[in-house]
Amino acid sequence: MGVEIERKFLVDEAIWADEKPKTGVRICQGYLLKSKEKTVRIRTKTCAQYSKGFITIKGATEGFSRLEYEYEIPFSEAEELLAEFCPKKIIKTRYELKLNEFVWEVDEFESPQSGLILAEIELLNEAQSFGRPKWLKKEVTGEAQYYNANML
Amino acid sequence: MGVEIERKFLVDEAIWADEKPKTGVRICQGYLLKSKEKTVRIRTKTCAQYSKGFITIKGATEGFSRLEYEYEIPFSEAEELLAEFCPKKIIKTRYELKLNEFVWEVDEFESPQSGLILAEIELLNEAQSFGRPKWLKKEVTGEAQYYNANML
Figure 1 (tube, each protein chain N blue to C red):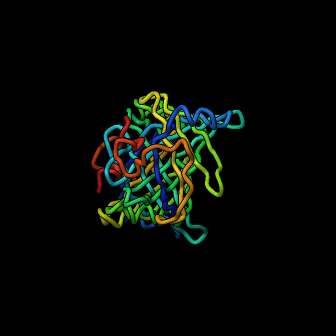
Figure 2: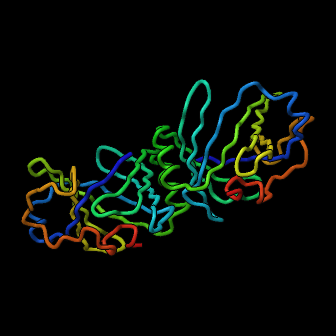
């Protein structure tokens, strides 16, 4: 079992542009299922080092937490599943940035919400404190419009 | 990618009882998603030799064929996914029987259709011929009521 505890923020594009890593991972994802209770997501991740595929089941968000089960699958089959079953897809580039003991994931969206940038941090518990990088804007944890599944 | 070409039959319980293997594999399965276009199934398989978990995505049946993608996942996580997301489950025992070059899978259902016995054979193509064991009754390939997903 996995339980995900995440907080999510909008990002100031100009400040972020000065700090962002040179390379990111290109992500393409679609959904076999999106409901209030659960989602089943197919994702490919591609970068200079690898091409990977994943299937991920997530439960409903409760506060900051969410059940999550993720399994790696062959890249070519993930591409087939996306082509066969997911007419709508999200495309984004993910950058990872380690700041103190935390890893920030910053997603720059290309499709469908071109220009949107979201930062996420994964915590050990809901009350854990963390430093706020200067490119962070408003917190949007729990705001439904910023769930990837709701963007399609 | 996988393409499944299967034919399915009802089984004569009395004749089958004389021929069936001593041991089978107990299967528990439920569905994250059931729609006309696709299903996402969670399954556990348990026998004297192993306990395994699987997630399987299947497309719509076209004739005798069906797209199928299956991935092994940890047994304990398959059990959690069934408990968390699948209130209704199928329980059955599967026996495998090799006859000539073919492997027959015979499923004895406990729940929800106690007493139902179905035999399946997987073929290389839709026209391939095969011998019919004497415990075979009526062919039910393509009959919606005998799709496992429709039993729940």
